[in-house]
Image (cartoon, rainbow, N blue to C red; front, side, top):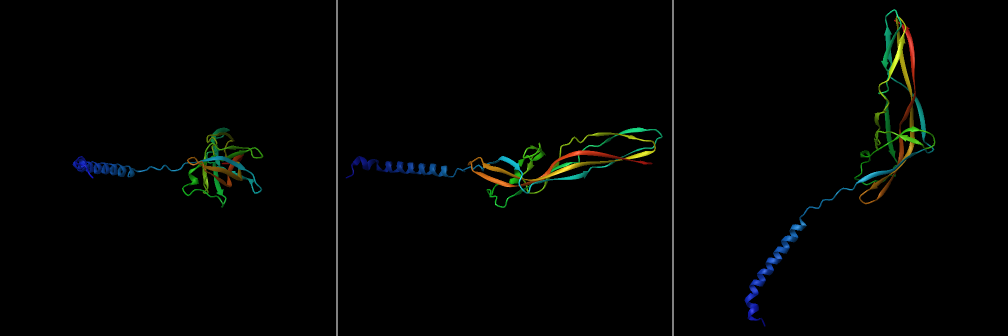
Amino acid sequence: MTSPLTRKYAPYLLTAGLATAAFSSSCSKEESTEPKVVEPDKYVLKDVRYFFTADSRIDTALVNLAGLRVQNPSNTLSSQQVEGGFGELMKTSQFELEPTTSLPKEVELNEFELQVPQHWYGNELFDYSTAAFPLSVTPQEKPYGFDPEHLLTIRIPPKSQITISRQIDAYRLACSFQCVLENTTTGQRYSIRGKWKGLLQYGNPSVTLKQSPL
């Protein structure tokens, strides 16, 4: 049986209960609509290694550099200084991935850059380029890095001209490479293997002078 006291305060208790429920519902609804910011996973390349396999090779080709010509129309021997630099030389790089390479869909490998071989000392001992290249299947090139300013002093006999021819050896390397792509958010690692080919180094520059009368 309900007491008079309970009946007297029942409407107020019911009103308070509704207010509390409404407040709780409002708080819960407000919390659920807050946007959640999901940071994208981050990746880094690690343990990059270049090495020789049975199909690796180094090819050598003679490269002709821009020629020069100087003249001396006078009757006395003269000397001239001409620019004979190597600023036109380029370093090239291209990667090929093994068909079985499996990576996360969001990863674009050409957004990663890494150093590539620049000098070879035998076995698998390399120096690496100071400039980094994209890990791209599309051929890439950057200035090789020779000092572009190099003066040649040419002695020219009277009434003569000197044609200057310049050459340099280009060593092109095709080898294998491997590295690891690590998800720094989850710690998961993916193995990447394939081939690298590009300009390894230049060497043995030479200059040939040919005299002819004016």
